[in-house]
Length: 496
Image (cartoon, rainbow, N blue to C red; front, side):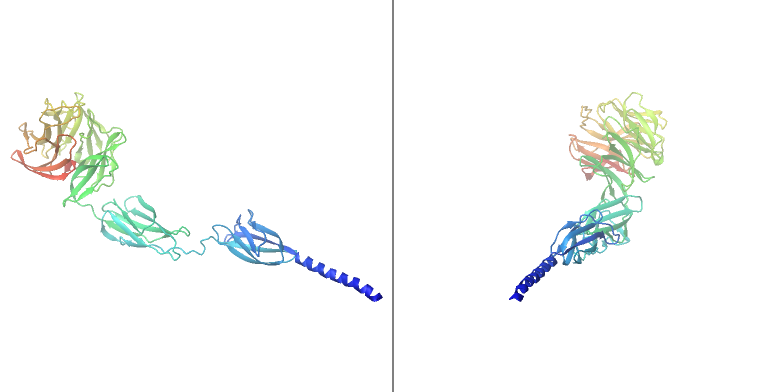
């Protein structure tokens, strides 16, 4: 019994010590520290979410890309680093008692495993293609192994200037482009993007557009409340030369320079422009002294000096300007203060025919001067009604014009019976060539044909608002015959 008295206390002490050691082991912990950087350049990444499996605490990296998770129970863990736009990464970590375990994450962009799309394959127009129309369907194809949504950019350049045409954010692999220039060499390339990788470029293809067809006939149509200039080739095909977004009118071709001069509204002024026969290289010629008169729809100008200059009116003054711009000079001023409305310079540059009138368009007269501004001859004056349509014959022997024989005058400049006449400088006689003109219509804006065997002109109702028709008639025996309609909804003809 005495021995048992000492055994029980010792057993109690042993059991107590054993239980105390188990409790201390369960509470042992360490820390997980680490750094998150970008792969390759090792730049620190801030605000990366760090968590573990099994779950402990969730922390975020600081501006240095560093983090620490404290009081992590001793165990083996999978540490996760996650941030939007980057690929989620995992690193293993074994936490030991009273120790720090360090992990480093090198994170990649979310698209790191995404493959670039294939370079676009250009289909049409084919490389080095010839004779391509000015309206082109550009087609191509591209594939993406990850089936990403693709967008395209089409870029078109040419060999004449620095103009670049770009069509961006395209979803389709076909793009129709209108308004290319005739006779140009074009270069085109397509860029594809999957919004994840850098864009991929196609090869560069080239093609040549059709040469501009021979056109000798021009006229004006109204589109979008603007005047627009058109041309016709020998086969009757129509070509638009100026944009419907600009008011361009009164075309006059010069065959020596192969240029077309015309009028265009610029702000609140009207200026002279020139362009190539295909409508390219549109260039403003006048600047500080614009074209002006009582009615800009009636005002006309003329080529001079074999295409080296242009002669135009500004109210009562007549100016000459170099076709390259600049060199503007006053060559004549109407002595009675009337406005100069129309001007036509003879083929040999010795004579200028002028139509002048008052501010309402009446009290009109037609006469000729020389290039120095000296008066030569009166053709018509002292009659009531409107005059218009000056055009000298190539030999200076005849002058084409129109006169409203009704003599009617009104505030809106309405004409009731405008007819065409040819004045002969040798006989001083005018001959009416508006035979068979329908009643209630006007013949306006006459021009000799290149052979001068015909006259083209505008015929329209005298109500002043109806459709206009360009017609042609033969000149025979001092009269006229064979009135023939050429184009509808057209005005201001020019046939060179």
